[in-house]
Amino acid sequence: MSSSNALFTADRTVPALIVKIGNYPLHHGGVGAIRSLGRLGVPMYAITEDRWTPAAHSRYLRHAFAWPTTGREDPDALLDGLLRIGRRIGRPAVLVPTDEEAAVLVAEHQKELDGHFLFPPVAPELPRRLASKRGLHELCVEHGVPSPAAAFPDSYADVEDFARHARFPLVAKNREAFVRRERPAVRGTTRVEGPAHLLALAREWGERPGVILQEYLPREDAEDWIVHAYFDENAAPLALFTGVKVRSWPPHAGMTATAYVVDNPELAQLAEQFVKRIGFSGIVDLDLRFDRRDGQYKLLDFNPRMGAQFRLFENGAGVDVVRAQHLHLTGRAVPEGEQRAGRRYVVENIDLPALLAYRRSGYTTPHAPARPRGTELAWLARDDPRPFFTMLARFVRPGAEHLYQLWRSSRRAIAE
Image 1 (cartoon, rainbow, N blue to C red):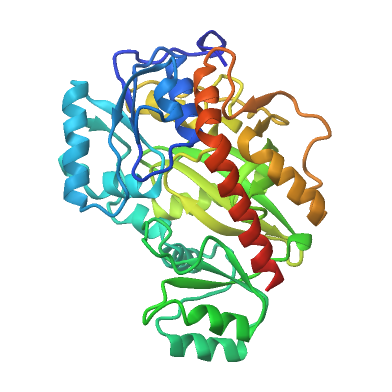
Image 2: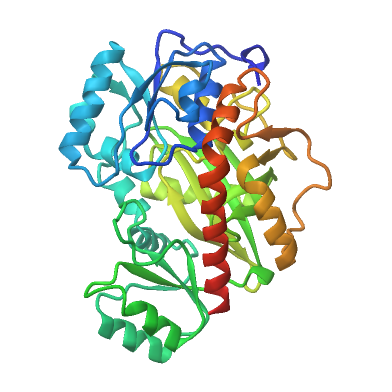
């Protein structure tokens, strides 16, 4: 979408900085944010792994700061690096975190960053708690929001005790998703078929398992939904969108490959009420699973930052969540409008393997429109083609090998 289609003007004197911590160069969300604000004339800057990161080649990017990080650095070192970048930009920039580590860093160091950057005010401890599987589950229980039943074993003995009475199958996930670990307990979401399988896995988790053991929601009885929104300092939604996930990669447990905008007032109200109760301010990306067995939307993930697929959502005035944040933090009104229902989003490099996997599994959602009302591609854009070709050059061999390994691991987890 070009800036001429937006029914508002942005403050072009205030730049924005895409903040990334960790090594994941093929991140289409960062490219989408650069394009979204860049098309409005906002000066765009980004932290990238190196100069061959696709985001670094966007025509809308003024400068890429090559700063390779892992997420295991000392927070003070990360803070110093971010402040150095702020001084190089030379004027306060709106921060747009693309991962939990970056969102937590900004929240926990607001005093040091104030005056150098613009960001929504939030309780310093809240993003870390929301990004934690345990913290999110506790908040859901506290505020009466449905979520899958969960256990948090602190030792192998706890796992043994849990295995005696647990209902299988279940899923195992890393407890602290926002901490990049050299050796995570499990590789993504792992389906566990029975007690013997669970105990075999637990032997590799060490003395203090960093896992959550969670109720399995059968895919034949469930639907995957997403909510993206921007909330102001009073936790009031200035932009809120709902959609349904049609495919993800790895299948049923990973990043969105294809999704549609679908109006869902019940889901929107649930998200709005929960955010109001916890008092969050900023951009959110929520993953929920609708359980047809009990008719409840169960909150799986609360990402306290921009989601990679945020460009799926836009209202009639041309507002997405990143634009809403920039408008609000620069003192401008955020135009209201209905979301563009039926709009489709496709991530080209992962949707083909996802399509093949979903055809094999037979999963479908009744909420996907028969025909999309417009499609947004994650990588390819007529007015900004270089990120797409840079992605292809970087993706083809290692990316194909990585997809193959993910495919094998997902099949093995199911088979076991």
